[in-house]
Length: 315
Ligand SMILES: NC(=O)c1ccc[n+]([C@@H]2O[C@H](COP(=O)([O-])OP(=O)(O)OC[C@H]3O[C@@H](n4cnc5c(N)ncnc54)[C@H](OP(=O)(O)O)[C@@H]3O)[C@@H](O)[C@H]2O)c1
Image (cartoon, rainbow, N blue to C red; front, side):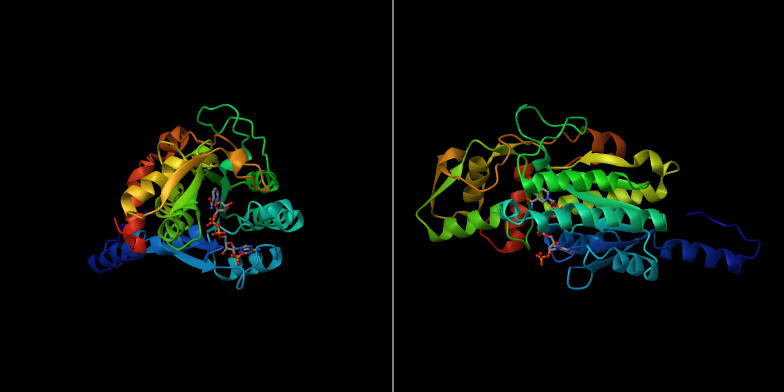
């Protein structure tokens, strides 16, 4: 991005006009019908200097590396934000092949495509790469030790992604968005249907509101584009809404704001067995993203009200 100073007054006007019309980044968003993908496309209006192109599996299967290459080349993409993933945490214990094909092998292909084209890859990963045994917010330097096939496949995927020369991996946690099926939408639905719901109180994490994460990702792209040393910004980051809570506290906050009728009863995870084991503690330390990009995630409970308003729940 630069100004060219022309001698003629007319040319100077044309130059300034083209400056304001410049598209900073042409971004392919994969998995665009998913929670985060949709939030990114919705965020496009707040980032008019980026051109976002959404593709979900029916238009672009990330396992088809050649198709990804052709699409990125033809659309002259300057970045890919990979929101496509196999996210069925419990099913992944039985469908390991599918989970690894999408969360790991396909990401290897994405990294190769981005390297061949010299473009930026932003890949999303998860707090489930950790085993949750240290009970202190996890930094990017902490050693992962996934407890589930989902977590293991995502860890493998983030390692492939980071092999790409221009790549940022962002781990997030407990993601929810107005368009998706998630913990929040399930609790609100059950809370309106039942008299009592049982929610685990021994899993601690940070709920993350999709529109906040989407804005953070597009701010990162902006800063990479304007940075004089963009390669210094590459690497692994954590982004989650600030603060932490148990699933039970999260559900209580939703009840408080949406006013549903059901009583919420705290239970321990052993009373609510699931196929995949989840970390008891998976709060992500977000100091690095603040230090490198100046991004300060909002407090988790402050995001519930906008979610409720968006989804027309009582607030
Ligand atoms: N949800 C969470 O709580 C959470 C927490 C931490 C991290 N994350 C990570 O955040 C990212 C976004 O998650 P999300 O909640 O937005 O996921 P999501 O709602 O499940 O969306 C994923 C999207 O990817 C699509 N997809 C699946 N396989 C594909 C393929 N081979 N090619 C192209 N698209 C494909 C899915 O289509 P179908 O629906 O048709 O399969 C879906 O539209 C993921 O990397 C996830 O691991 C999520």
